[in-house]
Length: 241
Ligand SMILES: Nc1ncnc2c1ncn2[C@@H]1O[C@H](COP(=O)(O)OP(=O)(O)OP(=O)(O)O)[C@@H](O)[C@H]1O
Image (tube, rainbow, N blue to C red; front, side, top):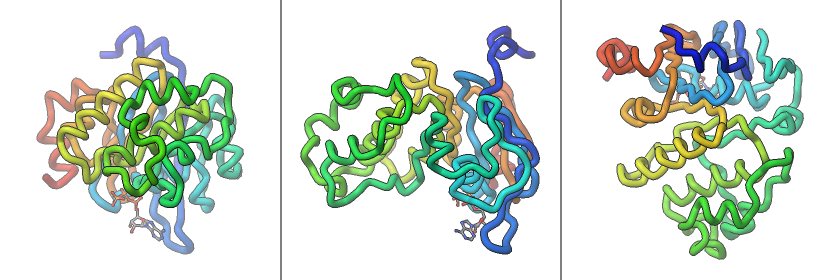
């Protein structure tokens, strides 16, 4: 059943028949899905299914791609990374990309503000209290959870309202995964639209509205949160768990 909110929310990102290559190797084979305003969508699937490549294709990091990716009606295929970032898409890669020689404060202030409405430094330190006490610590001296928080905080400063988060829970202790989950839910409550790549189904289930299942570079299923709840076996079979 479609809820009234789903019917009313407009489509922000539309991916249609997306194929992508690394050199001569084709890894995405016609991916299609839509993301609505304020929605939190996960990409789930086994290792190597093509989830990260989908995010990297949206962001323009994977350059050889065909099909269509429209963001607020603008075509992203053929656009460069900085042009895509300027449209208000923030990407948080799996490896977090914290600059090791820079302090927390320097890491935070490095990316340019691209859109108005980004969080100010004080607002960010309020939202991420553990970063305040670590403000002058070197990036790599942080715990995995703190690095993940910093990586997310950094894109919030740019003013992006559409976030691509690649496995933010990876390698973190359960208590930290819970904190990251709470942070993501707070962002959702503030109206951010999010695509989350996630292998941790329990985590994905807690935060998402819909789940796109990717297998061998194709979308094989799209499930609502309610469908995931009632049919965990189906999803687990996709993930081979
Ligand atoms: N830089 C690269 N050059 C060549 N092939 C790559 C590169 N990065 C990924 N691949 C290949 O592309 C396919 C899709 O990888 P991708 O990283 O998108 O998968 P994934 O679903 O995100 O899985 P994972 O969770 O393991 O990152 C895999 O077969 C992978 O080996």
